[in-house]
Each structure stands twice: as C-alpha cells, then as structure tokens.
Length: 159
Image (tube, rainbow, N blue to C red):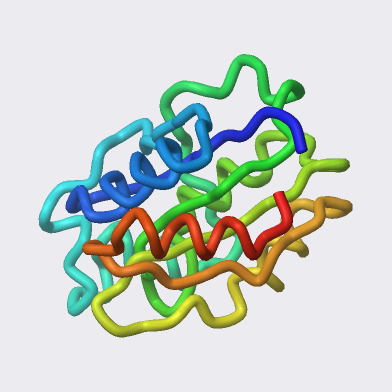
C-alpha cells in the first residue's frame, strides 16, 4: 500500500497519543480533526440533554464544521481514523471529516479509545458515510497500548 494518514479527533489527549503512536509505527502523516468551535466542558456534559455534544450526537445528520483540511487527500491510500467513543459511536465531528473527502479506492481503518465501550457498529456507519471505501472493522485501543501490540495489530491489517 502507498502513503498513509492517521486522522484523529481527541478531547482529552488520549486519542491523540494513540494516533501519534500509530503514525510512528506506520510511518504515516497525522491530521487532527478539530471542530471549528472547540468544545467546552459544558459542551461535553452528556448528562445535559441540551449540551452541544448531546444535541449533535442525537442527530445522525449533524455535521459540525471542522477547522482545517487535508490538502493532499488524494495522495493517501490508507487512512486510519481515530476518535473517542461518544454515545456508542464516532463523534459527529468525525462524520464531518468522513463526508468531506472522496474515499473511493482508499482503505479506512477506524480505531477508538474508550474507558469501556467497544467500537460497536462504527465500521458499518463509516461505510454508509464514505460510499465505495474499503472499511476495516477497526479496533478499540487503550490509552496505554505498547508499540509491539500496535505493530502486531497493523501487521494483521495487510497493509
């Protein structure tokens, strides 16, 4: 496979750390998916039915604007997409990223970080958002994954 990108969304820094580790193992470029308007602590209060994140996640068509873009997306053959699990799936801001580019003829490999939730049906959702991309089932990774385990996982992906 050709050039690789690790695109990730992180709030607490856990997903960012894992993304950088994957990029180092895979000799990939990194791109941080940042919302145009950063999330505040109040925005992330999942117990508040009117918080920004709750409103976004309860609307499957929500596409919060993102800051920046990948200028050379056509150069990448493999795109790792990382995120924390929110409401059992990828955050809506990640959906914005996924619907902003043509992923046909690319392999997408989702990975998530979570204190306990798995990756669920994320691959299925990503397939529905990206059309003809080849989407791997992905993996939940802990914040303290070692380099050797990352190498074993990525080696099994057939890249």
